[in-house]
Image 1 (tube, rainbow, N blue to C red):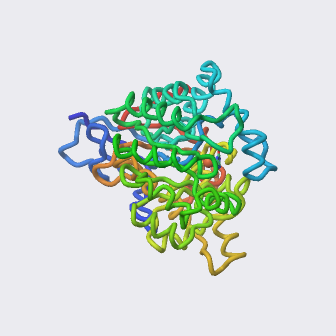
Image 2 (cartoon, rainbow, N blue to C red; image 1 turned 120 degrees about the vertical axis):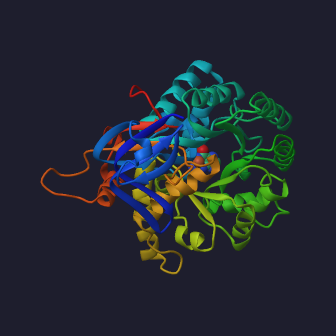
Image 3 (tube, protein in one colour; image 1 turned 90 degrees about the vertical axis):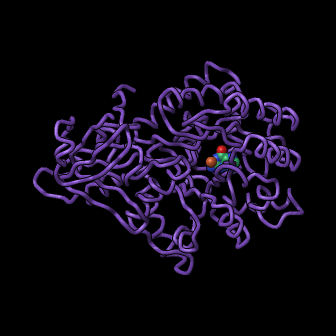
Length: 422
Ligand code: GUN
Ligand code: FE
């Protein structure tokens, strides 16, 4: 058995209200998996290699549960639009370029490298309608050792003629995509109907059949704006809620169901998501940029709904999930200020938990350092001013607010040190 031991200030969140802090401690990793954390190296491990990170922080790597790899090139552009205009003016024309594989390769190479640079090792990614480009993204994430779900997007109505599929073709291409990647290990396929306004009922029902045949989950946008919530029910008149569109098709029966934004959930949406153990993905920057409305995070969490964090690049302008942790705290304060009945301010511990352990739960045992979890870790340095001491917890908070990739001194996936070259 390969044993490696790392020394530093070790932090992780086993629960939303629990930050475990082990300052000046050792984490013992056997074959890439955490076995224990201790203040002194036990006798049986004497002789094993120890990597000493001094008083640097060792934290779990982040999960991004809603990100559009295909919109990486759009970051920070069109940020004065709301959703419908942003999609029509910027996003749809840009995404249509993914029929060109040279364009797709450059975009996806840069996107994957930037996720790794910023400590996101587990991601649930929207591609585009183009199968070949989606295959490339899938393979790229696999080659880099990431954990992931990758979805070929489906859209067969209310879309411009340069970015739309015939229902039949959409289903055939999706089936080919699923079957080509059957049996994959760390990166997996997921169904990705864009959202109800661009998907017909026959398409959604057809995807439900594919979910049953290939046992895969679903990733889409749900009740993300007042416009979207109304549009969904207009286009699906026999349905009582946005979530019911996916539930009735059988899209929530296999694999994870992951819903981005979830800003205006009805009681019925929440009942359906809870029944299926779905994750609702909070994307604070995107919420401010193009979506407009703040997820009632604390209310939903207290009702037992699972919450994850997403960058939603390029609705969100930055890839760093640690920054979304800080923004989630900021937005929860605004929400409490304006709508005290709807939600309460969350702690940095809770936000970190949603971005690590809870989001990571869809990939297996990642996002924590409890025994049995993969050592997918970041080593963080230089958060302290030279003349003033800080606790490990304070350093973590500062990293989320004002740190960046230069503060990430080492990155490990499954106990293997990643190359520092991106
Ligand atoms: N709803 C439909 N498409 C999109 C998209 O590309 N980004 C976001 N944030 N919401 C969407
Ligand atoms: Fe999105």
